Image 1 (cartoon, each protein chain N blue to C red):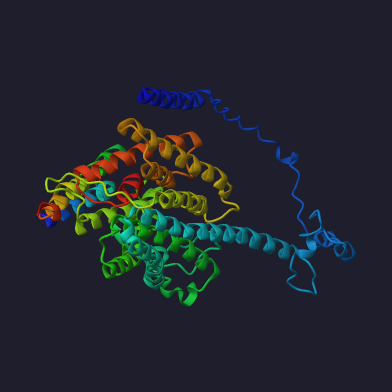
Image 2 (cartoon, each protein chain N blue to C red):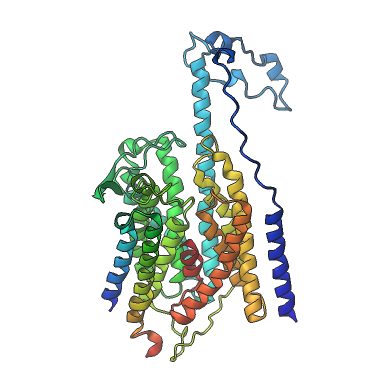
Length: 60
Length: 454
């Protein structure tokens, strides 16, 4: 799951960085960048962090 | 009762701020362009000749011997160096001296502000040590002490070349012509910069006075990002792992993003390449320094896990208070002092090119810090019934972090609003990181630097 999280986070980065090539209108680019940032945060807090906390010290 | 008084006080404060904004005089209308004067009426410029320069007389030797208590006869034509003694003082000598004085004032400004930023290491060290437990003070202080040297070594070997190796030209610091190679790739039909290559070990042509100024200033910025991570990972980070991690961050992680934003990389050229205004504008490093440090700290907190005893078996967080709040708040003051180097120094000069805005940048910086501490103090007071010293300190730092990127572009009222929002945001973020994400951030660096940096 951690690897999936890294991939999702990286996909978010690519989406945000690629917004300039995907759309010509700045408004659309802004929306794409925000989606990319949300994807990054989802990858970090939704996938990577839970994967590391599956066997967290305080759960043992 | 106390809560009502606080709410009323906060509301009054915000109302006063709003009224001040409303009462601000409307900007004067743009003056109409003056009608073009007839060409014949314009006086022809009179060129200054060497003879004119030679006619300027300085104080006599007799006058100088008497001393100069008022400072009126020190720094005159006598002090301009003459290039050729046979020709005497020429226009070229004067022009060259003016040029050198512009660069000299930029050098002095950038170096002195760099020294201030270097002193922030002391601030970070005592903030982090104060927020750690007494038994780990030695370890925390040692990490903060050595992160300076480890980061500098990595940056000198390769980090500076990656970040600034293709930044030329820079007019403020004399051109920086030796830093002239950026590795690029083609993306969407445009050449975008990825990393620089000139300046490893500061050897070859990069042994240059301007490059040295740039190295010193950028090095202390890089070290600031590195020391953010030590705060989050304090009390449980294996020392050898800290050395290796910090070295790689100073050599690669920070410089790569620094190049993208400040070294002529793809973010810096978004404006020219894709019509996005001025491109990615991060005046002094909310993103480059603080967000990079904060996000790296987040990754570190996820990987190394919490301290023993931080969470109960059912995931409830236990407060592990720091051992010396005096150190914490003194460190915050030192950091606020250092920030006067961080933001105003990022003009990389005090003369020409609009650099006189250093005054407004400095004022924006102090106002945002003030508003940040107010925001955090009021939030904690309203939510928990009393103000919290360490969170108020973190509010000050959050305001400073948030104003770092826009400090060169906004007015004082906007700075106060930015700082106030940052001060509240850092409290909310700390609660989220500790309770929802269940991450142990000893000093709140993820929230102060990561959240507000972004």
